[in-house]
Length: 227
Image 1 (cartoon, one colour):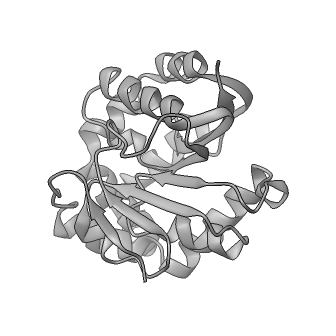
Image 2 (cartoon, one colour):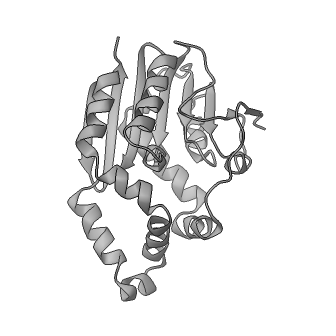
Image 3 (cartoon, one colour):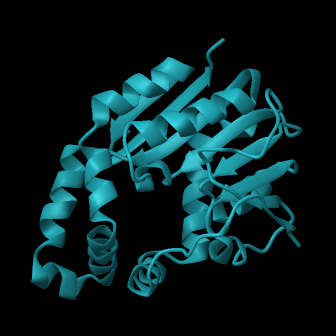
């Protein structure tokens, strides 16, 4: 079982309505399969299995489980919510910590991953800059950063339009769940979606871009620590 190390005061996680919607939107098994597919798209099957990997904003730890399924053993997770981390069942080391101040030594990790956490940051660009600066700090020379976050694309615009239709929400529970989650995180979500060029500029400030795609409502970014 994972040991949880507290490096900061634990925060309450999302409200009960958001939590209930999240459970309706995707089962843990579905989420793990999604994460495995994302990681494979980044080429994870060819990463050295001894890489030291940190997932930030790791929440319930399903991304850590996906990494374990792919054969990685040296895994760590960071999230501000102890309540979410306590839902993780696995052997990765987890930290209750602020991702704007990571609890790791300089140049000590090979890979940092985030799958849908940075769009919750309350203050842009300052909070994002703080997170990326910390990621850059803890990565070894040649260390890699992988991020998947919501992105304003025609597909996402269409999904948001349909999710506002009451009939569509009644007919498709998954769509209704997505709409509820969006409503409960609208401030930070819309802030993130509205700062695309600024976000990409910050990413490229700290990392040499290997790939960056924006499709199907997602940004998929891969970069190497900039010296």
